[in-house]
Length: 68
Image 1 (tube, one colour):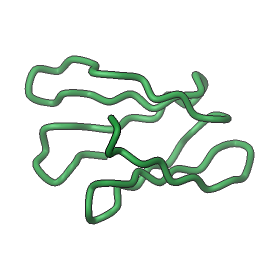
Image 2: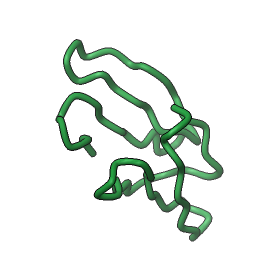
Image 3: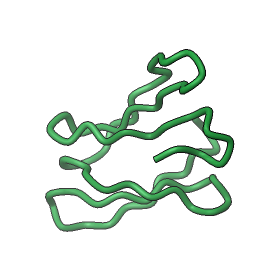
């Protein structure tokens, strides 16, 4: 899932309990956000401030990106 500008991507690490934050301009990993369970689908809120994802624990989470 890319942000509005297309410069940052959020990629689930399905069996690694995390979401990778990728700088799409230079193809480098900026951070790994730890999450409970194995995330799969991700959705970025229209504001770009919350990343929603579900996990194999059958739960929906919203992760604030303001501190990232």
